[in-house]
Image 1 (cartoon, rainbow, N blue to C red):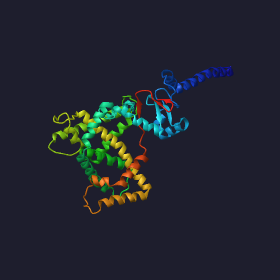
Image 2 (tube, rainbow, N blue to C red):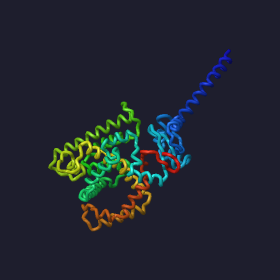
Image 3 (tube, rainbow, N blue to C red):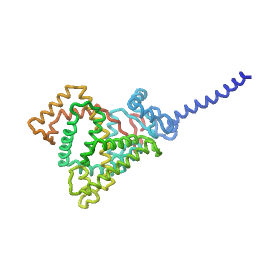
Image 4 (cartoon, helix red, strand yellow):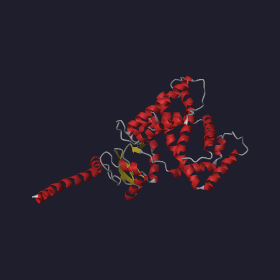
Length: 378
């Protein structure tokens, strides 16, 4: 009797296992089947689209460059996938990427980051605006902070800050990743709002920025404990902090700081004589964007520059020689000016090569209409 029951159990279990396997196979192919049925713009690039909703987001976030390398080896330089709830095409072809970037001004390709990214950056960030609004806001902002007078002031402030800050590094063993983050954050705060933060308050600000970064590509699930929820809370605190800085600045209107915030406030909605008038919300989003993007990219590039110079001592020696030559015969408290900067040909070459080698993250773009690229529809 027992043997019969066992055989009956196996016979009943086999179809259940078969159905389960079939369901898993169907789920793994669901995205691809769905978009083939609902989208007639074929042929699509080769590739895989993963599971429903999540697609291939998890391996993409976990393995990064290795994920792209594996898919490129299997499918070629252009392949389809499914990331952050939406179908996507990843392109590693230099000529195609150049074409995409050059087509932005025509409106064929727009910033295509997940919605959570735009929520974190703010509604008036240049990342969140399109076409005429983006052009107007970006042009207005650059015209205010890119003048020759402000440029010279910024250069002087950078030099003074670096001399003071790096003096504390003498004869110490340092964690360059942490120190690069700290240095760049303090420098940006000084340039934007002349803030002289202490290390403790900088750590709190850095933690807030980190929470915002984690929410960039997180699912938009606003429940306690989720990355998205923590990012929203961190952003609200940072926006409040920048708002307080603006109020403090207006209260001390007689004191000039000669920084970006002064320039923006002079052209705010409260200044009736100016041509360009920013609201406080727009000013805060611009400051937030500068701090966030500058901190994320510049600190990483600085850390990689130190690594590359350590790996190539002859480059470090040549770099040091050029900078010492410029300072020769000048007072100890001398700050470099624009002419000094323009004469640093080797220094600029080192910076450009570091930017090329450090391979900052790829860019996200979305198409406004179907585009045929190398025989495939995107």
